[in-house]
Image (tube, rainbow, N blue to C red; front, side, top):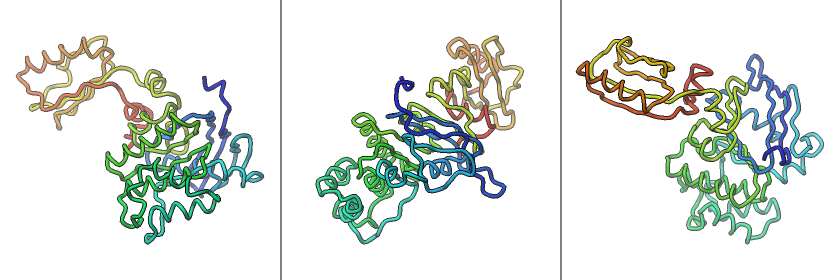
Length: 313
């Protein structure tokens, strides 16, 4: 389906170096109209630098970026009109109210009070419109920042870790706003994040970055089916068992067991057929499980398999 849609953003062999640091190291990426794309990776992966080049804040050392076939050098004013930005942290004037802040930014676009009212409703800040910005919670400040990014009805929304540091409830409130935009408008979005759940919940396309490069990209199902096989059993025991005593069948992909910490992980092709064998071994050795989790493989498993690190490291 995406092949039939217009390519909104094209990144071609883009590199950005800071002295010896290869922040972005030869990236190719195409984003289609209406697509929600997550740039997923740990701190230092190059996500923010890539987005800042797409925003026009930084210039590549090599390669090119085009937005709707245009570049920042020759079409700056036009591109500013179609892009909305929300950064990881936005600084406001503390002693302005929410309404005054939105009116201030709306004035830059020559927008009406009706538009400000629409944004207040969209980001669920109507009840806080007379509150000084300094008195807002972290989640409310991020919703205000998102509201400002949406004032000009942008075709493209660029969000740099907009929910970092928020509690789960505040994070979910931001997600709900973004899903509403996805369902009701044809907004194209790039979201940088190191939250697996956020990437998989909001975005149909996930781009995994590490050390300035793209390791893999695709839908969640495509990534997991191509790069990570099987299902996982994570467990902990009250006493040690030899790794050799754990059941081995042709369905076992990998067994990791830490005899010192009494915990382990078994990756299997078929969880339903393997789990009874595992429980039988636990019983036969008079052991007790202090924890047991059976789960599908995740993006973090994929990232570990590619880099040896967790996404949140």
